[in-house]
Amino acid sequence: KEELIRRSEKLSIVGELAAAVAHEVRNPLTSIKGFLQLLQYKDSKDEEKQYYNIMLSEIERINLIVSEFMVLSKPQAITYQNENITSLLKDVLTLLETIAIVKNIEVTKEFESDMILVKCEGNQIKQVFINVFKNAIEAVPDKGKIHIEVSQWKKESVRIRFIDNGQGIPNDLLSRLGEPFYTTKEKGTGLGLMVSYKIIEDHRGSINIKSEMNKGTTVDIILPVSIDE
Ligand code: ADP
Ligand code: MG
Image (tube, rainbow, N blue to C red; front, side):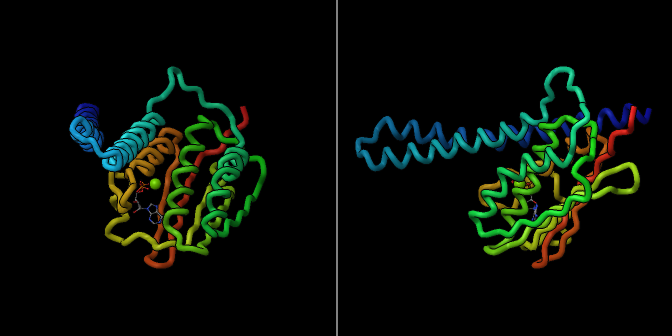
């Protein structure tokens, strides 16, 4: 009976998600359609250019939403392999640190070990690091700070911690994190954390977020380390 209830709960979550996705994708599509119709009657080049720009950015938005969801669609027979979590993190940081530098953000790192094996799907874990780090970049002011720590956690796990000194998250909004399409950003999708929670849950890990307004946010990703076979 319990199984049945869980199943129907899951189905209703899928239904809600499908409705939300349809809605989010339909908005830009409606806008593109409208501008295409307008274009048929336009003869001024300036106006045309403006319409093309709007349509391009709407297409970009659909692309963003769809690609965030792609991460969740697993390739057939996904195989978890032993991967070094610090090198996955370093791969991602090489790219993201350059963005941080451009924005005058100071990035500091503290890796307890250079070799910590986790059984995982490397690309999915990288995607989580990207999502969390991007949020930190977007939260900090000019001359902001982001600190990244990797350390052993409770014998069998590893903790990857991202600390930023950004605007923080109000207490009453903390519980909404990970809800699909929940965003406070003008150009946000509100999918990054939902996807991240899902991936980390699939890996039997957890994400914990602590935050204080105007002080900053700490995101902890906890993953079980590989046991020697
Ligand atoms: P998006 O970044 O597209 O808004 P996310 O799922 O990544 O979607 O994040 C959802 C919301 O959580 C953000 O809009 C923001 O309000 C809040 N948030 C996430 N990370 C942070 C952070 N490090 N500092 C402040 N707010 C954050
Ligand atoms: Mg985000």
